[in-house]
Length: 134
Image 1: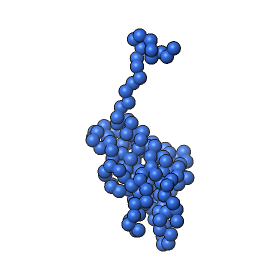
Image 2 (image 1 turned 90 degrees about the vertical axis):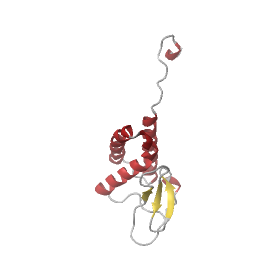
Image 3 (image 1 turned 60 degrees about the horizontal axis):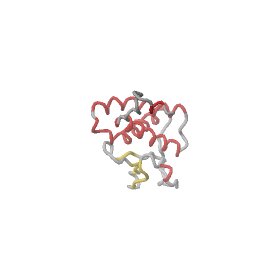
Image 4 (image 1 turned 120 degrees about the vertical axis):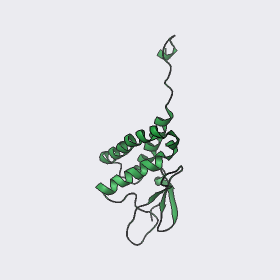
């Protein structure tokens, strides 16, 4: 017998929408890191640091929950640049100096990885596995 079926037993806790948004943002950025084969433990820790920081931010501005994937992606990208170098490298441009993709919009819903050099959207945040390297 399921303990939740007993009289007086607590039911499942409702999912907090802000926590759900944070978990979704984490999952999208982790998917992109895995797609580019850089999801090592120390890099995943950078994602966790960003999520912790953004938890406070979204608690202050709940209407910004839809912006979390792009913000977490940018936080991780900035942290990786400081520690390891540019990420994610552009899979579109086959010539010239390697360069990183940017997140657009910087603060908005439906963030995408964009190559400003070629002027193209490469993939939605969380969908770098579908972006074909050149």
